[in-house]
Image (cartoon, rainbow, N blue to C red; front, side, top):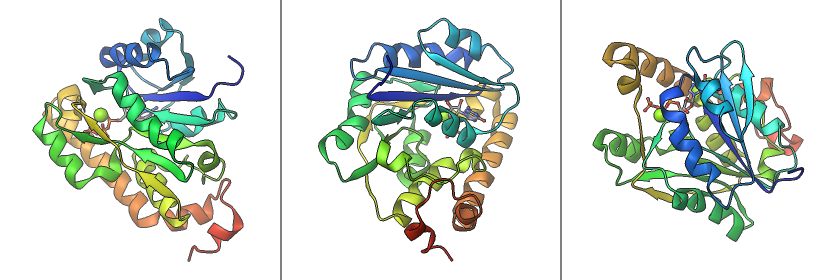
Length: 235
Ligand SMILES: Nc1nc2c(ncn2[C@@H]2O[C@H](COP(=O)(O)OP(=O)(O)OP(=O)(O)O)[C@@H](O)[C@H]2O)c(=O)[nH]1
Ligand SMILES: [Mg+2]
C-alpha cells in the first residue's frame, strides 16, 4: 500500500519467543494498514520470526536503542496519518487494545498522542508499576502532525517515552490516556532471569531518569523538527 493511514511500529530487541503472538494480533486487525518491525541488533531469531510475517522489517546490525528504532520506523512511513507503537512482548493483547489507542486520535482532532494504561492485567507487579509510572508505557498512538514536530529521538534509548510525554507537555498538546484492560507483558526478569533482568532494569531506569532530568537540554541540542516557538520555551 503506497499511502497507509495507520502504521504500527514494533521495536524488538531479542524478542524471538514473544514477537509472533503480538504480530498475529496486529496483522489480523482491520484498523492497521502497515506494520514495521525494527529489530535492533538482536542476538536471537527476532528478525527470522518477523520475516515469516507480511511486515516491513528494518534491521540494525548494532543496537541503537528503542528511541532510535522508533525514529527510524517513523521515517519509513512519512505519509501515515496515525502511528501506533506496540511492544513485542505483550501478553493478552487483543484487537480492542488497538482500537482503544487509535480511537482518541480519530475522534478528537486536538489529541496529539494517546498513551495506554495497563489495567487489570494478570500480573500484579506490572499493574502496580503502571499505577505509578504510567509515563513509561510504550503502547502509544501518535498523530502525524505531532510526529512532524518531534525532536530527535536518537539519543533517548529507554527514555523515549519520557521524552515524548514531556515534549507533548512543552508543546501544550493534549494527550489521551485510554485504559487497556487485561493486557500485560513479559518482564525483564522473566526474560533474562532475576540478576540479568534486574541489571537491565536498572539500565532502563537510568536511561529514563536521564531523559527526565535532561530532556530540555537534549531537545535544544538535538532539535530535530521542533518549531522555533517551542524551542524558545526551553531554558
Ligand atoms: N528496537 C529496539 N527495541 C527495544 C530495545 N530495547 C527494548 N526494546 C523493545 O521495546 C519494548 C519494551 O522493552 P522492554 O525491555 O520490554 O521494557 P519494558 O516493557 O518497558 O520494561 P520491563 O517491565 O522491565 O520489561 C520491547 O518490545 C523491546 O523488545 C532496543 O534497544 N531497540
Ligand atoms: Mg516489556
